[in-house]
Length: 134
Image (cartoon, rainbow, N blue to C red):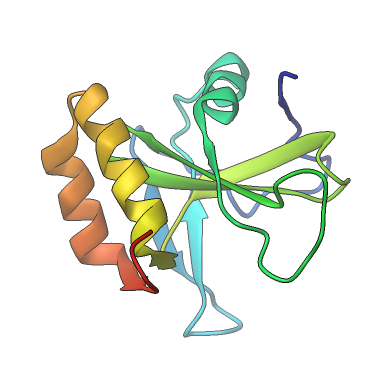
């Protein structure tokens, strides 16, 4: 089943102004980071990336679809989340914690896409590794 991208009518905080992904600091919560997508990323690119993305485990939630997806694009890691039980997803550049298992899959994807150096820079700058490697 193909995944569908849906930015949502009022989701503007993940929209960037330049050609590269940006991680910004929230004005309201200084510890919170907000990923802003490149302005050059088209809706067809977003849909393609959703369909390339790997699913993260849902944890304790027993859902029939993945709640979170991750993909590498030009070295940056993007997270996509569903708010309607997997019908559609919205995505943004990601900064935060990821498991070793998910990172291993994303690094393999970065090799396939010939962007492993920029991927590793993204990981070193924005990602905190945790969990067991499975």
